[in-house]
Length: 218
Ligand SMILES: [Zn+2]
Image (cartoon, rainbow, N blue to C red):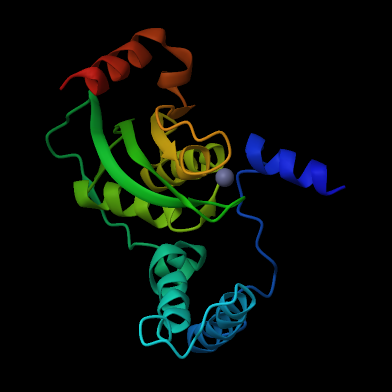
């Protein structure tokens, strides 16, 4: 039984593109969540045999709890979704817009260790454009969850499709998984690449090639 759980963890098999959240995920407020995580993390450290009276360690459970809720897993809560403001495409720029090399940090949901890398986003406006910094913020929002890379890619792709009101959206994520480099097979050189192609990017090879050419430019 445990064997198959380990296998799924290491093979990084994703399920649906929705993060598997319980219906009551946000009944508890953030303050209470921090208190509970602090308590349980202290317990984990205690079981490991660490002396929680030590000056260097005693603040760790609270620090970890705050980091989980306010930073690295803040993207679980829809209230933290960046507000998206669209602008009219006044210049009638009808070509693709590519925002490349967006650095992001996430955590693998099977081991809770970091995934980090670059996201490249492209879209073709159908009348509206989005502020460039919002593109980064949306990527970081979905990355701030326990994730699998396939799901992260799809969540970002679906979000831009919805916000921009166009199917013409492409996402490529090129990421490094610390659960592969720092443990397990300990391969420090491998990266994982995933893609999402909608609309023209899916149906028109030329659009896809153009996008790939932009992101390979230095
Ligand atoms: Zn992992």
